[in-house]
Image 1 (tube, helix red, strand yellow):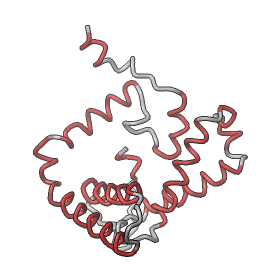
Image 2 (image 1 turned 135 degrees about the horizontal axis):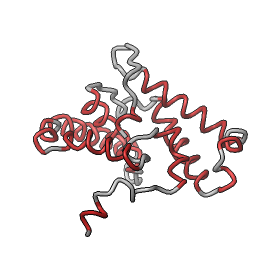
Image 3 (image 1 turned 90 degrees about the vertical axis):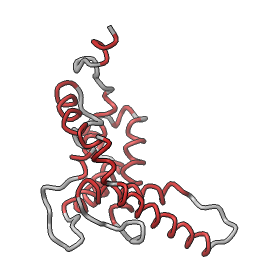
Image 4 (image 1 turned 120 degrees about the horizontal axis):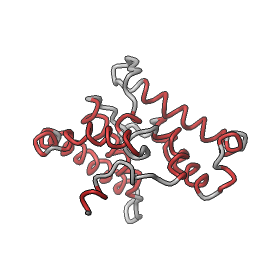
Length: 181
């Protein structure tokens, strides 16, 4: 009985709140339901096979070493002060994701002026505020508010980054982080 329930593509309807994430994350594995979710899951599952993941070990190890270096530099700059690991971890994760999934080294751990990383917390913050304010659920209302304008501006910055992700400056319109999520 559990197999029938857990393998069902019909019993995975997600809350309407996930719809507020669509402009940011698109209709990927995280936000989609039903056949679309099943199709995405089926497509991405081979990418997590042990043999495939093992090929990324070197990249993950390299990015973890960079994480260690930038954190040591931060500690040296401000000895005795606590550091916020969250931003460091986000930057490391984005470096790993871009290089393993797309083969592009964006080096956001060292490039602190990266527009994507500046826009990311703003998009996440506003998406969270929208989830807890039911009157902002409708796009026609949300995008007429200050939050909607800020969200759109930050999202445009993030989308521009994904369109220009190649470190050599080549425009790659087919690559989008939404596809990965």
